[in-house]
Image 1 (cartoon, rainbow, N blue to C red):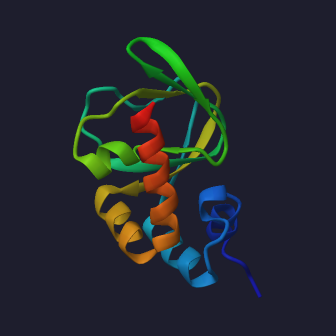
Image 2: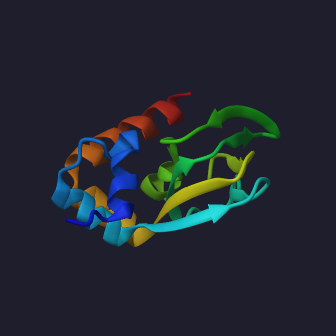
Length: 133
């Protein structure tokens, strides 16, 4: 039996690790994969968010107010605050190394939040923690 490589990659992301096979298959249909070089801006502080991004591989810096406030690695995600609140991006995120990302458009993100309550809980908890900080 051939395994879907995208599903296997998604299964390795901690956010999706506890998803059922059915949830992973649905998620694989929603996400786009993107490979980018070092130095690519993935989100810009103050701009309207249009997608939710999961860093599958690579490293990215999170900058707020002109200062690096966090470093993201494989399994980390961002973009949920703007999509949940409807407000502007709270930080700029730039790749520090060649990176692979899974991207969900705003409609796909809303579908995921509706159809996968376990993921929704983890994403909203992360958004709350980030907003509190």
